Image (cartoon, rainbow, N blue to C red; front, side, top):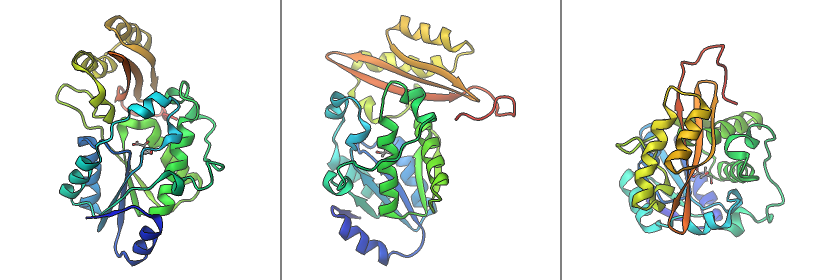
Length: 265
Ligand code: PAF
């Protein structure tokens, strides 16, 4: 496995690669959700590339960025064990050489659900993903459906801008008690982790969004939103853990897809 720290080095290398290239962009703090994406690429592509870059433009809360877990040595070991061929570790000055003068803005779905209370979040995500896709030039890029809104926005961006890459959505990987795997789970204390178990179970209940929301509030969550869209129910909650808060998101399929229920976005 080769670790690449400069984009120039990567570009030279990219020209020499043969066969299909699979790409998994990450912000590190790898967990089994990420390894399932890496495995999908290792199984389908001739070459697997992963990036680790904690993208500051998608954090609207500086505390969230400061608290984001950094486990680079362990991440590189996971990537090596999974059979990743290249890990790219870009730096801000290369990714944002323009000083974030240019961005990719979606003006409808990105303002809803997770975007409603996180202004600029999806603009940061779409901008960095477009940059990374243009740098890596993969045949396929893999994203987890735990971040379903992100997956849909990236899929639609690629279609809108005629980008020559297949976006593959992979199923959410869960802990044994149902909690969706997330890098932020590492920030939960014992009590917060116990409470977090109730989140996914509540989303799947046969009850209205409002009923689920008030049940979660009663349990001690601070609810950002609970909202059903088409065949899915989406939710975001905040768990208080000592002097910090941890934001969790998830979504579950609640109905069969049919014409009446329609699309999510
Ligand atoms: O899902 C993530 O980890 C990030 O949003 C991504 C896609 C790597 C962009 O920074």
